[in-house]
Image 1 (cartoon, helix red, strand yellow):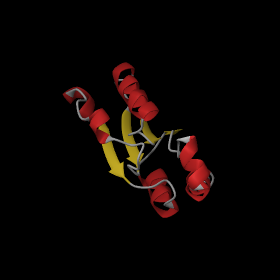
Image 2: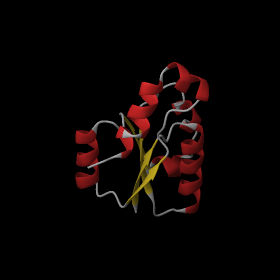
Image 3: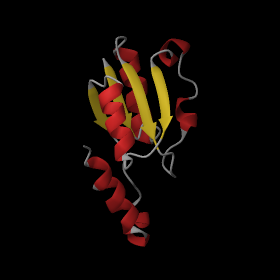
Length: 110
C-alpha cells in the first residue's frame, strides 16, 4: 500500500509516519509538506534504514491542485492521511487568510 501523508513534517504527522512504518511493513509513505513554521524534517532524520527505503519526502503545498492531481493519478496512491493545516491560534488572529487557504482550499482536491 502506498499512502500520501500531508503535513508529515509536523508533530502529529511525524509521529504517525514513524508508527505506520513500524507496524505496517508493506506500506510506502510519500510525505508532502510545505515546511512552514510547524514542519520540521529534523523530526524524521533518524528514521531507521529499513524505514527509509519505504519513505519519500516531497516539499510542496497541498494548495497546489495540479501537483496533487498528478500525484493521485500517477503515483498509485491507495490512501491519503491528511494532517496538513495551519496551527497556533494566535497566528489565526493575526493572519486568518493563510488558515482559510490551507484548511479550506488545501483540503478540496480534484
